[in-house]
Image (cartoon, rainbow, N blue to C red; front, side):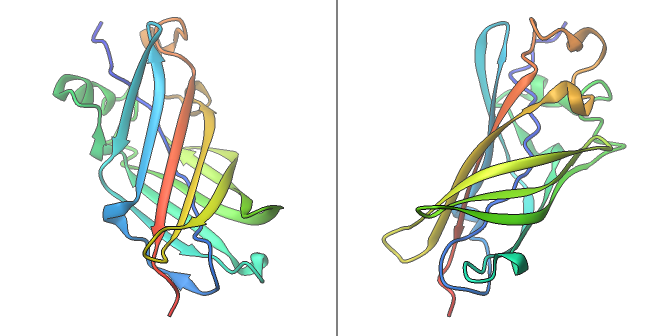
Length: 187
């Protein structure tokens, strides 16, 4: 059995930018989608190197706000070539058949004090589940909007880690996905 340094499917997830109004481009080089799980009781962290985001954040018109993500599952970075090869196989992400994970928001709700919840559908390996991502908004020194949030998902709900990998004592079922999106000011 190959020990995976993780496998986690983040997904996406969704960060909206905070700020005034309008569509904003995500500053990809300053943004990230990371994840953490446990394998045999040891924390395993990783990230995705390639993903796309379509974000519109309108604090005064949340009904028109949206956050859609598409994550290239083959771009997983686990700091181990062996683990990265294993995670792409059919028992895990099956990247030949399912090359991307997607999150499509359906609603954005203000929970107060620059905090929001982004609800939507998360699809991994052909399985779609509802997801809610709590987001905290702030401004950085350059005036960019920074949206940060995290949520937990159950990998087995998405058929990630099947067969011998389905035992949550070997690889935890819970995966924590962390998202940080940096968006330039609306001009």
